[in-house]
Image (cartoon, rainbow, N blue to C red; front, side, top):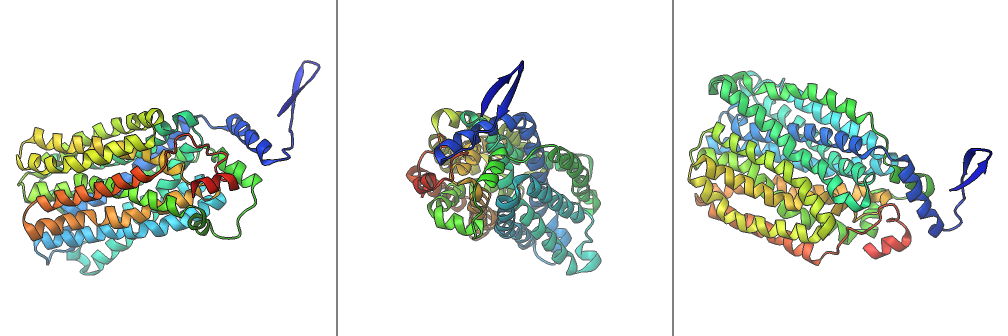
Length: 468
């Protein structure tokens, strides 16, 4: 831009770029001038992800605690739990499909529109779960309807995560990208915190019979109110300025964004899958399987376990942005490697602490596990955003993370329950967590550092070729 003084009024004129070298500095300048305040962007992203993960984790908790009796009553308790967790896994299977669809349109139409749609779909499905008849009322139709709504949940969440982290990453200060992009990540423990808190309150004020009969519906119905709040906030933000400039000044590809992702970023997709693997497995063992293990094998009451997860989730929420900020100083890889190694080792202390049946020890087990998990999850949003070019970033980030969710997060509770059932011991589950952490450790170790990449210029032929 050039400023010309006419009288006392400065007039800004547009300087037409004549080469890519001139164009990209102008992009950065225009992005800076049109950026929505980062605080508002973070708030919109955090509120939305909190609500969506509240919905998702609410289902996971209900699948472990009440769904076996309500929707699979003819099975023995452990088999009923496995069947309920299988419907939980169905949501993960739908997530890559959601990632493909939302990623495609997010790279063509923008991040904001798809984030609003994902919120409506997720909240609507969760509200309807609270209205479902049980097996006692409609027989086999009940678990079928439950599975259908779970598919919608997973489909919406598959498109949510990529858009939420990108709209922050593409707005924030590049030097603090790890910190700002970690806030949507904090929506995961925040949503878990909210879901666990609601369930803990209901468990404290209701008898088991009342909770199983009708009380479990309350948190699902509350989702409708939360969605209205999140929708109001998300509609108030602007589209990503980096995406707007890329859309206006680059020729659209004739192929789908996902095709371009696998053409230019095959290695980066594999890095995202491997980096996500240990993070995903450890999280769902620590927060979902722990409810099954602690209440069946360790003999603890539901309120004790829920309160331990509640405290640990609060600590997790606080520490995720701290890990993100540390990655701005040290780099994404060192912080991520620390988390992967820590989780793999902590697995061997996690279950013995739960076996003590002591509330403080159980709380310590879950809290330390989630702190170490946060060392992976905090830098993850910025790390994955820095792997892909702008016009295929939504697709690349989404599909890389959600493919890992099928083989990692979806199967983690099922594999853990199956191992516990087969060996009547938590030791095989410890080995499972350690192997998953090792996969992530090796993947991140062989990857390149990304924290100094410029998202505004990432996407030129020269930049794409350096990331392959």
